[in-house]
Image 1: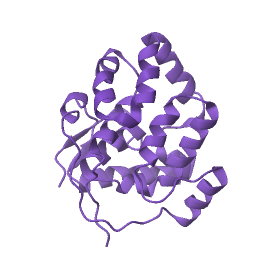
Image 2: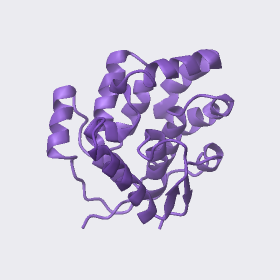
Image 3: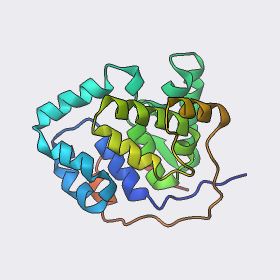
Amino acid sequence: MKTSKISGNAVLYQAAALCLAYPDDEFRSRLPLVREAVPELRTFVSYAESIPLPELAADYVRVFDFKNRHSLYLSWWRDGDTRRRGMTLVGFKQTYREHGLEFTGEELPDFLPAVLEFSAQAGTLLLEEHRAGLELLRLALTDHGTPYASVLQAVCGTLPGPSPKDKAEAQALARSGPPMEDVGLEPFGSPRLLPLIDAEPALTGEPS
C-alpha cells in the first residue's frame, strides 16, 4: 500500500492556498512574503499587488463564483452536482482525520485552498487523487486568461508526470487515474513562510 509522502513543496502549497482564497486586507499584507519565498507565484503576486483590493475581490468573484467551469471544489470536477458527490466529500473529511487533522472551515472540505493547506502538512495524496480536476481547472483558467492560472500551473507542476496539454488529455487522465511515482519521504520546504501565512487555518491538529 502506497504511503503518503510529505511534500518538499510545502511552502508553495501553503502560499497557493493563500493566493486562491478570497482576497482581503490580510491577504494583501502577506503577498510580499509569497513573492520572497515562492518564485513560481511571483506572476500572480505582481498582478494582485497592482490593482486596488476592491477590484481584486470583484475579479475573484467574477472568476470563481459564477461559473462551475472554474470551480475551486475538487469533487465537482469528478462528480458534478450528483448524489455521489456527498460520499466524495465524506472521503475528504476522513482523509483529514486519518492524518490527525480536523476540517473546521466554513467551506466544503474539497475547497482547493483547504486541500492545499492539507497537502502542505501531510503530502500530495489528495492532489494526486484529484489530479484530473486540477488540470481541467488549470486549462479553464488559462483559456479564461486570468492570472489565477499561474497559481494552478505552479501547483500542477509539482505533481508526478507531465501535465495534460489540453482538455481531452485531462479527461483521459480522469479515466485512467493519476500517474504514480514511488518516492521516499521528502523534507518540508523552508518553514519561514508557513507560520506567517497560516494564521487562521481551516485544518487543525497535527499530522500523524
